[in-house]
Image (tube, rainbow, N blue to C red):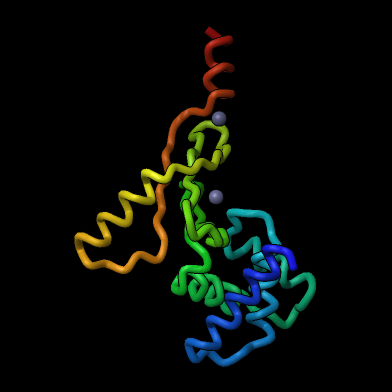
Length: 152
Ligand SMILES: [Zn+2]
Ligand SMILES: [Zn+2]
């Protein structure tokens, strides 16, 4: 079984364990979300599922995303482009974070265990149960910096 399929099954069984009634529409949205490219906003996910099942409404898509965030299976990312975006959160060890270019909008992902340790320590100190963290660093990417240099 591939990783995406395993993760999808885990989400569905975990939701059932938490007393949520099984819903074929919700399962379908979860399947599409897990299979999709990263950093989708609710409209983009809705456009994907609507093509295959016209009976699925935007509200169901939106609620499913919020549910996944609530249980830690997805996390919200905000690249300051006016949308809340979502990505699957299937990295139990070291979660990745984002560098966003404010000129071209490119997104670079990076991982650093030190951030994870910081999150754990802060949570422990305050007896807080972390579900996911969010770190977005905004600036100018290498490509944009090079273009700028050439112009001057
Ligand atoms: Zn750039
Ligand atoms: Zn990402």
